[in-house]
Amino acid sequence: MTFAHSISSRRYSFGSLRELLAKATPLRSGDVLAAIAAESAEERVAAQFALADLPLARFLEEQVVPYEEDEVTRLIVDTHDADAFAPVRSLTVGELRDWLLSDEATPERLAGLAAGLTPEMVAGVSKLMRVQDLIAAGAKIRVVTRFRTTVGLSGRLSARLQPNHPTDSPAGIAASILDGLLLGSGDAVIGINPAGDGVEVTAQLLRMIDALRERFSIPAQSCVLAHITTQMAALNRGAPIDLLFQSIAGTEAANRSFGVNLSLLGEAYEAGRALQRGALCADGQMGGNVMYFETGQGSALSANAHHDVDQQTLEARAYAVARRFQPMLVNTVVGFIGPEYLYDGKQILRAGLEDHFCGKLLGLPMGCDVCYTNHAEADQDDMDTLLTLLGVAGVNYIMGVPGADDVMLNYQSTSFHDALYLRRVLGLRPAPEFEAWMEGDGFGRLALEACHPERLLPA
Image (tube, rainbow, N blue to C red; front, top):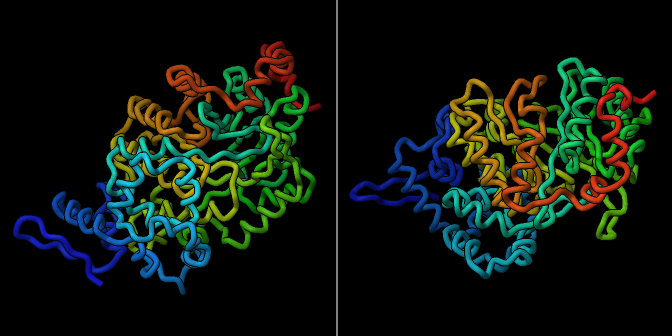
């Protein structure tokens, strides 16, 4: 089936749904690199007109990555909820956009719709939206998850405390954890990217965080972001694992490049749930979300596993993988891969808002690593803008990196102070369990140790 639209006297045709979605995507360097982007602004607008007139049901008839070749496609098709889709089945993509921005699209209706939408539908509608549309629609959606803290509640903003160290020095990591806790970060997770991927290092860091947590009665969950197989090996050796982490992508081949598939993720999910390390949260519900996923536009293209699909649609497909395992946290590391995929601050800003909107609409607890690499055409002013817009859009959590400069991963992110800024100007608060701890004796005892971070290390 050919999709077409005429502008002035010229008629533009698009030979497949995959091509239509790629041509309708706002300009970004990754799609240009893949030679699938619109060749002009006029062609992009023609594709967007054609996409707006496309019935949503068409997405159920044609797959951008073949069903027979890709387990992510099979997951999307086989788990689609026809009953949840029924209220919008008769709409076009353009009509869905209008409905999402209407008063009829209440938080309750959006939550009920999530299982009925495919990632391609959600990616498609985002391509028709302005920045303010992405913010307005995203702000309606709340996805709440629980482990020891409750993340995603209205009026709250959480932060991942990211105390990375280039040599995995326990003393250096402990000092950064202390810094972050005293500045109100860590209620999303205390999550370390280890410099090495060894089981012993992973287990050592997990034990250190857990000892600190127990000593000061900190309501927080921990994670060491090693490969999922390394974490499972540490788990089998008795390491105190809270959340299990893995980077994921939107195609089977891209996930294979990460060394994972759906079966392995399912095994980790069941192992994490069996530990039952979550706590009773402030609302009386037991915390049981055990997975933490990171994604990023361009990951499939960088692995040559993109099937000529645009990077933003593939990013939305990664959310189908995440949704399967009811994660505690999902984080789009928006500018991390580099300018080959998101060239400048403008492209990074839009991508971050797209990812947040698409993930939330698909029912995911979205956070964002507001970040850039030093060779991108971006700076901290661009990150401040995206940070603020995501706060208005209701992002669940952001990163807290000492000084906003990750000395291990060598990229620029957001700091503990950035979370304080966003909470202050928007009237947001930490997770309720973490906020109560900050007002209690445990936080006071931690503050007394502030001049002696070496004391935080387990004996």
